[in-house]
Amino acid sequence: MARNEEKAQSMLNRFITMKESEKKKPRERRPYLASECRDLAEADKWRQQILREIGSKVAEIQNEGLGEHRLRDLNDEINKLLRERYHWERRIVELGGQNYSKHGAKMTDLEGNIIDVPNPSGRGPGYRYFGAAKKLPGVRELFEKPPELRKRKTRYDIYKRIDASYYGYRDDEDGILESLERNAEGLMRKKSVEEWRRLDEVRKEARKGATEVVSVGAAAAAAKQVLFEEEEDVVEEERMEREKEEEKEREFVVHVPLPDEKEIEKMVLEKKKMDLLSKYASEDLVEQQTEAKSMLNIHR
Image (cartoon, one colour):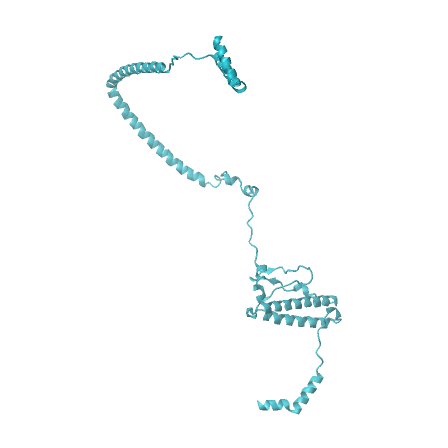
């Protein structure tokens, strides 16, 4: 360690480093404005320098542990370098060089899908997000896709897919339904024939039994007919008696004479007169009037 320090402090080494620094050209600074550059090679050199700076910062911004503020600063610096690169590429085209902006890199979301770069002003490359800056609060929402709204089908869309096959008009074209119906028809016909034969045997047995008891049945039927007619007569008489009793109950006998319409009108008129006298005449006048009527034998 001491040996290295002695070498650095030696006069010869300091003299050699001084001569080497004199031979080196002064470090050139990139022009602030791309329009100040007049040489195509120089413009391409400054573009390459900007690309190297962008690459180093993009590699640095991949680290999520840098913190939110540092990530935002790095993202702003990268976007500033991108705008500067855009100016230099435009200057290269003006000087007659290659157009690099045609093959620029696209912006991707968290899943790697290519998306549009937000550019409200419409000039320049727009503002982009790189690396861990895509996961910052407020930025993640920009890359999330809105939920797809399911469009409600109209009646026209529903009926547009309906054709003749929906109503079953083409079911017979493949021949499957015809074979199934043929088998089912054979089974149904066989069951119907068996049922008819069984019923025919039952009818024949019933006819044989009916011929044996026809004589006994005829006598019993005649007796039943006589009894039935007698019962009908008894029921008819009871019904007639019941109707007569109901008619007697419905009759209403009035034992008190009822007033007719004229008498009712007189009574109403007399009542109105009495109401008017009681309202406008005094009690003495009413008493005198009643006495006069009684003396004259007037009953109104």
